[in-house]
Picture 1 (tube, rainbow, N blue to C red):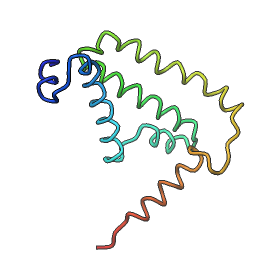
Picture 2: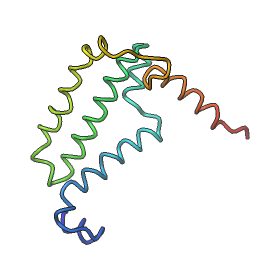
Picture 3: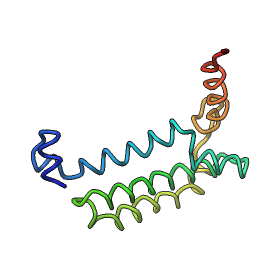
Picture 4: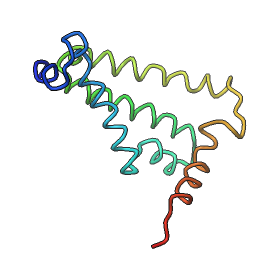
Length: 126
């Protein structure tokens, strides 16, 4: 696979390390955004809570990391470490919830309203 990447994209062997990982990870995110499938949005809807949305976003990234690491042969040995390293910061959420002061402009709080506005502004009448 590495030789194919080097030939196809004209990158050297040093750059090819993690190259497939990056392509796969971001592609998974883009597919999710453009299809509307979103673990964080699903959890927010099911729970009516933005904390669930934050946890969902974290889990979605960890799953994308896992899939990308398993596909990229240069990252495969690091897959378990990537997953554990991605999940550990989620343990900080209770502390951050107590310490961080959120305003009406906070990304997570305004997320639902922003998405709703975006959808309305992109709605075309046929």
